[in-house]
Image (cartoon, rainbow, N blue to C red; front, side, top):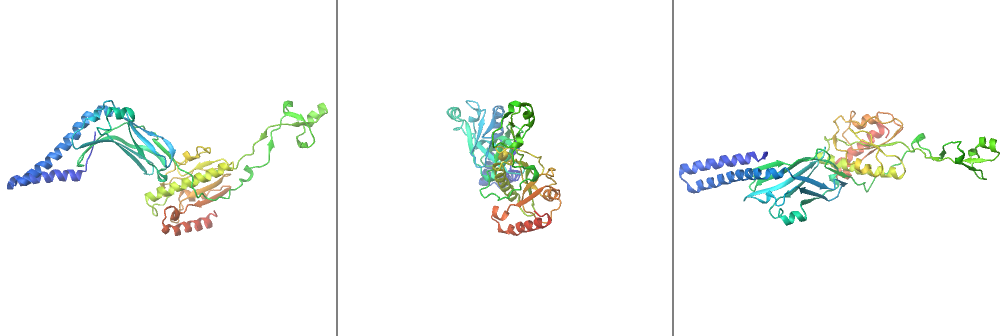
Length: 402
């Protein structure tokens, strides 16, 4: 059992009521005495009622469980939070005056975003007809700022008096795994990138696998490439044959998309940092879709993560996981192949930040590197960040030639 109460208000109410009662009895003031007695009755009734109902509810509460539909969707999706396991008829139909009962679910991401849902357990909602038809559920709205991977912070049945003196809760079991994944949508005004060709790792010409198997040959006809004539077979048969090997697909350029989710909290608030990382993921998704459209492979990384190679269908899910972290958190991007071409999306910061994940990454040699800062003045509609944005572009352009 967990008891939640506003300690200062409740204790103050008890002390004030007792002092008022003592004063009223001492000076023989009937109105003062009755007021104190009424206050003490309310305080006592509230505590006794929530405790009694908790004892009555606790057995059925152990059978309750909550489901979220869908558990994997895009931002802006309407979620259905449903409470199941209620008996028919339910013991929760029993109530006492002045006491409200409800189920409360709180979901939280690693960077502090919170989604919560409350399902009232009133007598009308718990009627046999209502339960058999729909069950108990509420709709939870999401938006672009809801992106992330959520874990259950708390799942509980709560009993509270209407005056707010006491709240008793009964914990409801919940899984320790991910409860909800909300994927970003690609940015409408995506970054314009001039993509690097990938050097020798990309070739446009068709190559063929050589073979001497006769079943993969056909007679030569004028116009065929003479380099594909099998001269060994000509020496045996006197006829010209062309190799018909399978085409060897050209390898793709090796691109790594790096999202630097480090936030300089000397400059931005926690909420602003979350919004900027959401924008970073939306821009990253737009870039990933452009890479996929051009038939490039997609490799993703961010500070504190591994190196992922999702396909075009799962890249949006992969971009639900990056969370805002402090610039001083000492989380770095894993070592990337020196032959890779690196696309970096980052958030402006106060300079210098020599030990940051971004500077550590830029100090390592790679075949090609392109750095793009998102503009917080545009994302947050705050012009005061424009100078910091421009200063970062100048600094990294001069120091790292990005």
